[in-house]
Structure formats: C-alpha cells, structure tokens
Length: 391
Ligand code: DGY
Image (tube, rainbow, N blue to C red; front, top):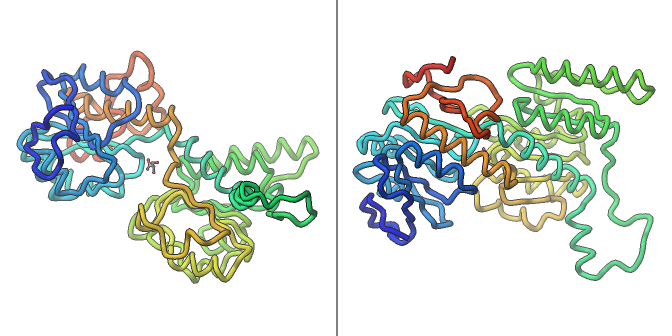
C-alpha cells in the first residue's frame, strides 16, 4: 500500500494503492476492479494508477480530495456522485476523461463534465446478457417462490410432499411485459418469449423493430412446427402493459420521466398475482408504495436487484415474503465485470492517447481481443467534447 499523491486528509492514506509509480499520467480508480488486463491498458498509456481499496462508498468530498492538484483521468462507480463540483476539480487538476464503471450513468452530471471539456465513458455491451439473465433469475425465483421454499427447507419444516406446498405461477404461454426495450430489456424479452413461449407486450419511447422482427420470425417458426403461436405487441401506453402482462420487467434509463414510473396507482392497475421485476435503477419504483402493495396483495410478487435509496431498503420490504431481494448484482459475473474493467480503462487510455470514439455500435467484443481497436469504446459525450468518430 502506498500514499496517494492527491494530498487527501479525509481518506486514510493506506486505503490507496499505487501501481506503476513511474507513469506520467495520474489516474484514480475509486474501487479495486476485477481482472488485470485493464491495468495493463493504463500502464501502456503511461499511467500511474491509484486505486482506493475501501469498500465504503466515497463521498464527492472524498473524491475531490483524491483528485488533488494533478489528475488526468478517473474511473468511478455508480454509487458515487460525479457532479459539477467534482468535474470542476478534475478539470482544474488537468483531467480530461472520466469513465463510469457501469452502463448506466444517472450518477454522472454529463452536462457539467461537457462544460469542463471532460469526456465521459461508460461500459455497455458486456453486461447485456448477464443483467438479462439476472432479471430472468429474479422472475423465476419470484414466480416459483424459490427463496421462501429454500428458507422452509433450511428450517427443517419439510415433513413430506404436499399437493399445496408453495404453489407459484406458471410462466409458459402467459404474457410478459417489458418497459424499456433497449439492449437489456430486449434481451430479457427474447429470453422469456423463446424460453417460455410467452406473448410479449412492450413499451419504449421508440419501437424496437429488430426485436419485433426476431420474435415474429420465431413465432412463425414455432407455429409452423405445430406449437403455440407467440404474439408481439408494441404499446404506446405503459398502463396497457401493466394491465395485460402476467410478468413485468423494468428496463428504462433513470431520468426525471421515469422516476417513480411505478407508483401506487400503477401498481393497482396490475394483475393481483402479477410478478414485477426491477434490475434497472431503484428510483423507477416508489418503494414505500410497493411495500404497502406487497402487504395488501400477498399473491403479488417482486424480484428486485435495485433500491430507491441504496444500500437502504424501504421500511418493511425485508419482511415481505413475496419479495425476492438481491444486492444490485445484475452485472455480477466474472466475465462481465472483467469486461467492464477493460472498457472503463480503454475509455481512459484512448482519450489520453487522443484516439477517436468507437461510435454507435453495440459490439464491444473487439476491445476484449488481444488486438483492440485504437479507439475509445464508449464516450457518451464524444461529439460535444470534440472527439472524432472512429473510421
Ligand atoms: C450498470 O452497469 O448500470 C449496472 O447497474 C451495474 O450492475
């Protein structure tokens, strides 16, 4: 363990570990990241890398202290507030790039970063299937009451098979509702429709024609082989999705229009035994309202990966047997987390090297190869800070 060069009084110096002391550019990383490759990308870009070893969430004040007088770039976490003050400090310290270690960046004031001329990166593409699979796991766990049944088993209460023990919901042939059909929502929809022959009703601001084409083709194929047809419906109305679906999974980005998208009125629109899944961002659901609904509707079940005020949960949520709750592990597979490390580091290294931006494509696999492109994988404000597109 080494001493930070940021002159930090709030953080214990021993919590920061420095790698490649001789690097000429200084990059701070607010949590240890999985894998090794990401570090080498930064070493190759002549970076000295300082990594905070604490598991505690850094406040903006602590981040400002860590940035110190000289800092060229930073990798931060979705649990931290990268706000105007932080970006002004980073700019003052000579910083030109920040990468969130996440695909979502609702914790980042991108406009403030842009005003400071700082590029903002994120890590899409490597967590799509991983997060969709977690949403599926929550769906199945809620539908088949896996956590309740597991607790029953462990407590030694099982005295023999019963026709009425832990009756859950069948998914096969029912209707799945998806709100937000971007990368993760569309992947979840495909998995549910193809895996359980479900009909899909979805809402997004934009229609997802690729998803529709894919599932219509699938529907024709299963129909031609004599199995149940599947139907795909795009709905402009969120309420219609909530009314018609047996399972609803939430995948919108979090912004002012989606905060408390699911509120007590909307919960009342849903079927009494519906399953609601959220692996997007907690504030999309009014969590206190959800707890009240869970208490009065024992057959309504939820699977939650995210919470309105993480790491806290709304009062009473943890006592609801009809809630499956996990600690924001949507992207938590080794492969994905290593991939996220590589993309975050590649964003930093590329901007420091003045490389162009990879562009709109979703395919991040080239960056995981041994010969990555000379480009920044994903800079959300590339155009606004004058980073040219890769060609
Ligand atoms: C993200 O990347 O936005 C996820 O929430 C991390 O799991």
